[in-house]
Image (tube, rainbow, N blue to C red; front, side):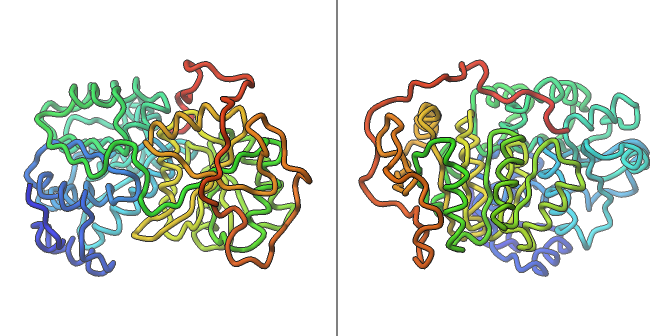
Length: 436
């Protein structure tokens, strides 16, 4: 496979090159340079790359190039390209990318997802669109209402396939793929490659080219990772303490539950730390306002659940805090991938309660590396869960240039696997239908 190093070497439409130049994009990322030439040939593709590597442009540019060559408008109630996304935030981000790259092309597009009125979406899709970006639940709603037919589809994209399965969308995906025309181009993009995806790919992809930029479930090389062992009851005070020295200007915090996210935000606001939560119980307007505030730096901290993780594509996230460790190890990879984007470096710190140590072991097995341990005044003194003498120390070391949690080599708790109550494996995956 020939790897090209400039966008103008890829054979893209002149209008696309003009749009890329206006955005200052000159050099494709590895997944873009490997994928785009194959997709321009019409081949199916299975793309595997860690988050933040430019997957969206890797499929958006060839789709726009292909559709620009077609004559006429799409028939009413049809679309020519369908991009399926697991979450509202990611769907909106993909839609924004298509508008950016296709701004000099006369192509129509729509982004549809749940949480907002379906009426405007019905009118837009009913007119026919070139490009439709959708979440599975809302797409099925439109199909069931006979507003949309997929019979004229030319390109089908499944983005973040692994999260699709984690969120329980496999039945919706099977229903959708059963309605696709036999002749079409299929694109699968995923950051990780569990066995379920391999089976789905075998069923839907025809002689695909496989583009794998990094090993499965690796973490961003420029992310400096660390673990702090801390009792759950001390996590909020620890987070406040870390934020006190102003060395964390744009911080993304991940909690396991919606209630937990709201509780963290409430605690931060009491300390006058500008923050907001984003999760499945928030309205679309609330989610959009929170993201906009975070992007504009009006909010210093954004607290999110995993359901929103892959839609947060924001340059300049300085820190990711895993307030709770995820039940699904691959989610850790996606979480910390929110920092160190666009060539920058970033910091990722995780809080680990004694009962979460089995999750930590699962994560370290998945990423095939040990995460260095950082000591803190609120850290556990021993693996048995005893706190350091003195307990929480408030906002200590306020004048230090480096965060108080910067890691110290060689300090890692020994022994004890944790003996608290634990969730059985069959309960460790998230349920379906959390975001449509």
